[in-house]
Image: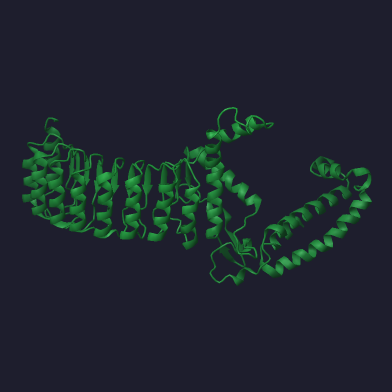
Length: 464
């Protein structure tokens, strides 16, 4: 009976009405059986409820019937109070989990679902040492556990529901710990309450979310906006991965504002790759970089930043003292953006890894970068692969390698550099004592033997 009523509550307005009618007929039966059983006599009601929890005591048919009725009533009341009785097909947007809408259209979730969510998060954090992967390939999709079948259609969590669950996880595992750690020993309110020490120990024993991997969630407009509010009240994160979410400039700007305002959020690894970030979004990212020195690595690969976005990032690099890794792969950056980045490299003494793979900088952009690197000894890893460059760029690279004392790894795969350009680079390596690895594979106009020869020359030179 309990199971059938639970299923009824998952099938829309008409079925919910039937469940409510069933409940109205169940209550009188419950009272009659209670009177016969004597649970209302001598204040024994509480004791009887405790007894029905122990199945070993249910030896009489009246005991069994009483237990079934009690559980069905409790279960039905919980579902009616928590689930919306609004027809789910009135929601034209079809943004998921319609049975959890209440009449105010606020996202409201059953307490049991929230507790189950926190339990699953705790299990994952313990297994992955602080990595909360909302959607992954190797690990089961956390949000995917709460897909419901309604009239042969699958409904997942809506954006508000996903946002609420994420906020609860951040508060439960991180924010509460931060507030507790900030309290001074013996402060009023901590030692005065009975059991406060035990409660504090329980909070501190919980795992902490240090890496939030939220890639590929495909959030709607609502969740994208809510992310900023969630991060504004969060703490303890080291890695924030929001890649491949198709977030626009407004959503990214909100996230950046939260990271800039929230002093408790010291993000070191920020992945925004695969989003719809243009110049405006890059300006917001650059503003955060200019005022936040905790960001160690920034990934903007696949974002349509273009020259305007690269110029904004370059301005931030002039004053940023914390960014070590910058990935601008496939960001549609042209020569103007490369020139701006080259100018920034003349002043930046921190950036160690830079990827311009698959951009549109051409020979002119490579020339600007190489001129800047003649005096820059801090950049160690440079990726110039998949560029439409030829031997002119190879000549610029050779001139840079002849005097550069910083670059240790250089990637030049899938370009139009020929054997002549490879020879120029090989000659430059005779005087270069820093480069340890060079990759020129995949160049159709270059003999394959150059790959082994150039690396042999690079590794055979004494280190400066």
